[in-house]
Image (cartoon, rainbow, N blue to C red; front, side, top):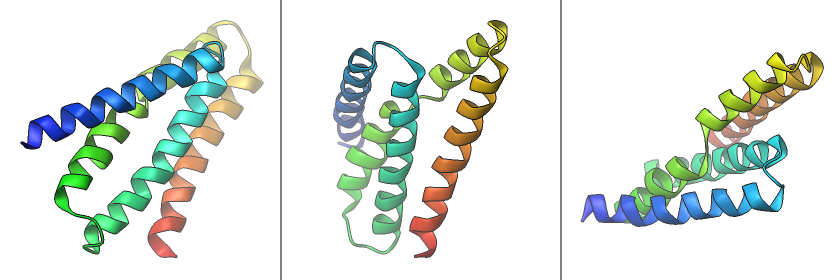
Length: 113
């Protein structure tokens, strides 16, 4: 049952991620939105799971399955590298900085608020 819950969540997470990519015409802002919103959702789910506000099956389905496939570090790395290769240094630094610190910052706020 565990693997099924993760697989179903992963299916919906990857489909949602793909829809965002299409909506933003595969522009890095789509990856940024997925990573930041996925981090926020994962932070909320993690806190809820640790405090017993959601059941283990919701954690498996939404936290591990959905968020695990919805957020996309590999695409983030690829897009960052492309910007650097294209000598778009300011865009690359801004993209990497905001993705990292907005994602981590929101999770930090969720955990400590």
